[in-house]
Length: 81
Image 1 (cartoon, rainbow, N blue to C red):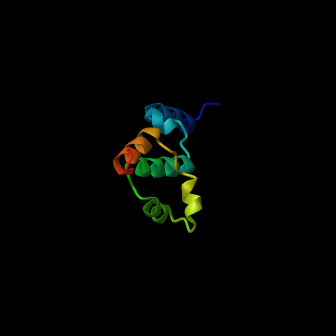
Image 2 (image 1 turned 90 degrees about the horizontal axis):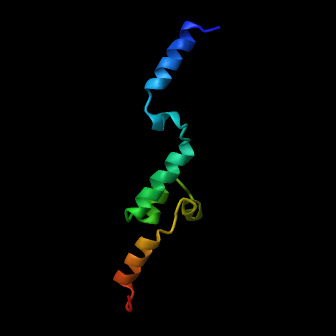
Image 3 (image 1 turned 60 degrees about the vertical axis):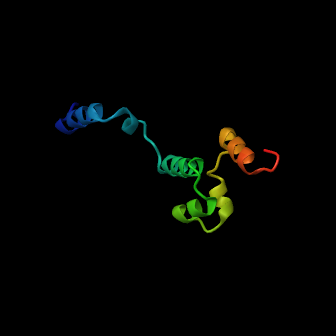
């Protein structure tokens, strides 16, 4: 049975942007937030504080080694870079 509420929910759902219909979890948002901060050059300790982690190893779970960024940092700071 199609109710008025169900009909309105269907109409509302179809007007939502596609990224909102993808059911993004809070964990995905946290992970993306931390990854973008770190990729943008944020300090791991600063990200740790922003995420509220007591242990730095918990924050390291959110990191990915961006090979391009790693090469840039290496060539900038290593004596034989």
